[in-house]
Image (cartoon, rainbow, N blue to C red):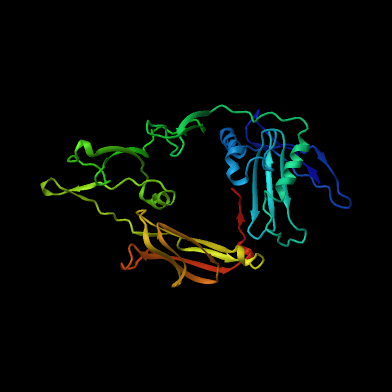
Length: 359
């Protein structure tokens, strides 16, 4: 058995590098095998530093793991957790500028654990080993040349514009930093009488500028779900100087979950109550609808009245299934229906085992 010392080579390459073994322990009645070990740089020092910066950011991981979690240490350390789909294995792997520690937790007979994730099972062990292995706090990760600190518009990732509401500093590999000012935040003149975009004919006393976040059409559903104001459509000019509102081409109802043409598996070793699929839909224009219904294979699974969106859960069931959102904008109006999402649910197959990774 060889015990190798993995060290983060911050002074030299800035990338993980396997060094020669520090000890060789022969196992009784087994061959003493030696394998040549050579140094091999896998990624650039700049990329290694950026990945390390992300994985060592306690603030960034706090929304998922909370503050002062087992992944937090009193010295700089990068860490990642992972869990197999069937709860048989969970991992926590992390490193300081001096040592790398990887911890696996699972049952010796390979049976599933009871919903133990990487941060719950391997995380506490990793935390304690890292504390014991660093009696003296290690140095911070050395920063290589070839990096640029740039202030960006936080929501868009572009350079700040005068309209950008929030900025932050980010680190980039030199040459990859953004170069264009933000274009997402725009001030748009609104006609106060109609709530639509002002035109050349709109009197000054009815004009007001409002700040909107303007994103591509594919983000429309997300913006509505997040409560972000949608910029009103432009008006179309009519003969004689009058205007008409441009008609929206977006479907009035959108199914936002599940995504169509996706496949799921039912695992026999997991509680049925945990094997559920989120189902959601919304009114694309953000207006209240008299009634909304989520439908699976023709059966209504949940209903809402005077609502702009609807959320529910559907227990996984074997076979092919169709989902859609339907409803009436006002009482007594014809039923409007969203597009369908088709999914497939099969039995779990061990040869298709995937790894679920915590955020």
